[in-house]
Length: 211
Image 1 (cartoon, one colour):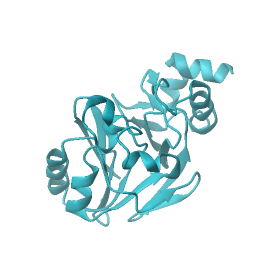
Image 2 (cartoon, rainbow, N blue to C red):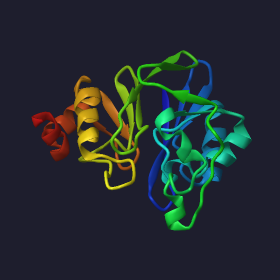
Image 3 (cartoon, rainbow, N blue to C red):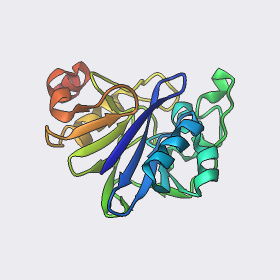
Image 4 (cartoon, rainbow, N blue to C red):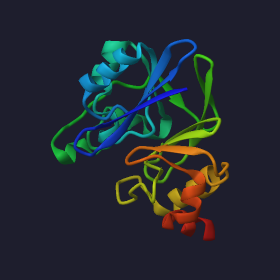
């Protein structure tokens, strides 16, 4: 699996280009801003982008969706719980920063437990609400893309409309902390980590596991 990360936009969001090297097909995860930067990355990797997958619908993870979907023709996927965020600036929070982002409607709405393929790779959708109603993580073997559910040393904010701290704690406990310790996490902001590292040292995870 090929993984390239771009830290984009004023919120320093992680956008990932993920590719299957055997088939040279790829997907974009969370293209928040800087569509041109992401496009340059796609060209350098020589990938055909089949999908744009969103871990949730907040502005800093969807801002470049419209331009990239237009350029690549990729299928757009998001969990149904966040679907309306794509087209509603108040729901995706961009109205409050004056950016008023309106992305295209999703081509496909995801559900917990379903799998999406990328060449020879398979990714399982883990519905992890709490930061947003339709937040998801994507797991493949010993890798999990956690969006704003879990960071290295922290977790996603729960002071937004539709967020809930207890729900996020349950998602982390029941969906992520059941994974092997050597699973690498690729979060929506900040550096990568492992499930084992977060289980030992992340104060929010320690709290979730005590509940």
